[in-house]
Length: 122
Length: 297
Ligand code: SF4
Ligand code: SF4
Image (tube, rainbow over all chains, first blue to last red; front, side, top):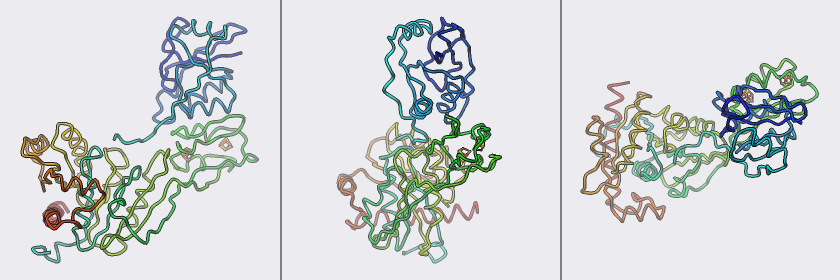
C-alpha cells in the first residue's frame, strides 16, 4: 500500500509537516517496494481551499493512507470519499512515523478541524 | 429639525463602523436612526445581526438570498478535469471519477460552467441566508442573516443595499459588521459618509486605527464618535487629535444609557435627554456630511 505524509524537508529523517494543506511537500511511501516519492504540494500557495487541493494531490497519487498531525474538515471529506484512511502522527521523524504506522501504532485521526473562511475578527 | 434647511436633508447614507464588536456601533446606529423623522436602518452585521432586538420590527417580510453554484451531470462529464483546474478557490475536487463541489468554498464565479467542454455543469440555486424587512415606528428596519457555516455574507449585504430606501426615507443608517474585512468594504461602498465609533481605551485605539485605515483606503469622508467617555484621559481622543480626525460627538459613560442599552431599549425612545443628545449628534453629522460632499462631490 501507499502512504502519504506532509513533510517539511525532503527525506525520511525530516519532520512531519505541521499544517497539511500548507506543507511544502508530501512524501508518498510504497510499503511493498519501499520506494519513496517526493511530491511538491502545489496547494501550499493557494489563497483558499488549500486543504481540498492538497487532498486531491494525495488522492491522485493513489495513496491508501495519510499520516498527519491534523486535518481540516473539507480535506477530510475529500479523503473519506476517496476511501483514504487518516492516521494521527506522533512526535519524531517521518521514518519513525512510517515504522509506527507499519506496527499498527498510529490511531485513526478523529478530531477534524472545521475550516473557517472569511470570518471577521470579533 | 431646527437649523437644518430643506437642502440639508438631502438623501444620505451613513455607515457606522468599529474595529471590534461592543464599541457601541449598534447603540449609535439604532439611536441615530430613531432620532430622525423617518429613516431606514440596515443591519449589515449579517453574522450576528442585533439591531432588530432593539427595534422589534413589526409586519416583517422575509426573503431568502441564494447564490448560484454548479451541479454536475454525470452522464455528460467525461472527466477532463478542466473545471477542477480552473477553480482558483479549489471548490471542486475530482474523486471516484466525478467532480464534487464544496458548496461553502464556491464563490459563484460561474467560470467552471464556462470552461466545461461537455456542458456537463449547470447552475443551481443554493440558499445562504435571508433578508427581513419590517417597521418600527418611523424606522424601516432591514436585517440580513447569514446561515451559520457560510463563507461570505457579501451576497446578503449586496441584496440589503440594493433594496435601500424604496420608501423614500432620506436618511439611511448602515450598521456595518465589525472589523475591516471584505464584508465591511461591501457595506461602506455606497455610503456618503462613515462614522467610526471608538472606545476610550488603548484597545479602542487599535480597533479605531483598523477602520481608520479602511475608510482612508476607500477615500470616504468620515468622522469619529467617542463612546463611553469619562473624565479621564481618552486615548482614542488623543489618536484623533494627532491624526487630525474630526470628532463629531461624545457619548458619556453613564449607567442609565448602559442599562437601557443592555435591556435592548432604544435610549432615544425612552428618555428625552438622550433624544436631545442623539438629535443634536444627528444634526452635526448631517451638516458634516453635506459639508464634505460639497467639498468632495
Ligand atoms: S463557480 Fe467558480 S468558485 Fe464555484 S466551483 Fe465553479 S469555478 Fe469554482
Ligand atoms: S470540465 Fe466538465 S467534463 Fe470536464 S471534468 Fe469538469 S464537469 Fe466533467
